[in-house]
Length: 79
Image (cartoon, rainbow, N blue to C red; front, side, top):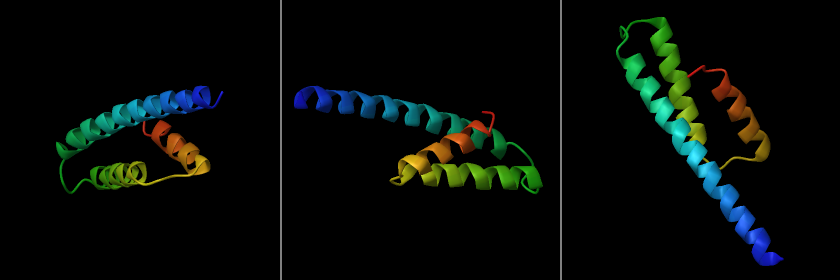
């Protein structure tokens, strides 16, 4: 029973890591795209600020509610 729970947690952890890696790749691709925009563009400046903030939030330990909030923020980006 304990081994089954541990295995389940391990699988969920791996799936979560894969999703994070996919999201980080999408964010880095968007950063590359935004870097092609004029540097004085207010859209580009704001978008870079948001993308960098998301990368920072993904790098730190989060609670479940913070995780959900990050998911909503990510969904709002339309990557």
